Image 1 (cartoon, one colour):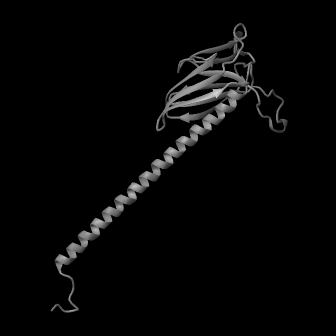
Image 2 (tube, rainbow, N blue to C red):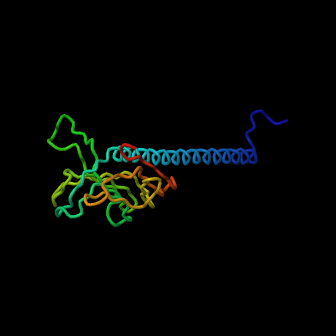
Image 3 (cartoon, rainbow, N blue to C red):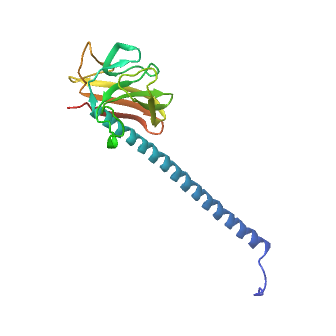
Length: 202
């Protein structure tokens, strides 16, 4: 009969160490998977949040488009009120004037109209605004990165039940707005996303 004071044998110690090692490895794998899952969830949540923010800003812009022609930096040529559909890398995808530009407490004497551009720079959707509707060479321009991870982006315009990939509302031509504007994008982590915005009065 084994004495009560006898210690563990070498074999028993090895078995115990093996069992402990297996439990530790399983726990480590479980914690690692949990952390990776939490990290992926955080990334996905941030991507959806950024998309919702970009949508909210674009919806506000498109809802207040105003057909007010603007000049280019060098004068009256090419006056337009709403232009959209240039290929990526060849100027802004959208350029227009919107109303409702807040001026808290009348901080500065200016119009409530604001010139807005949307353009894709590398993999980022950029929103640009400028301090004056009809610019000079030194008119300040402010930029905001709305959405990153943009692999592709295109716009299309609905009028009379037909979609087209370009729109021009110019002083000398068609001074009307489309019924709706669609933005189609391929976004890293989110895949293909389509957003449709109604034009004012629609």
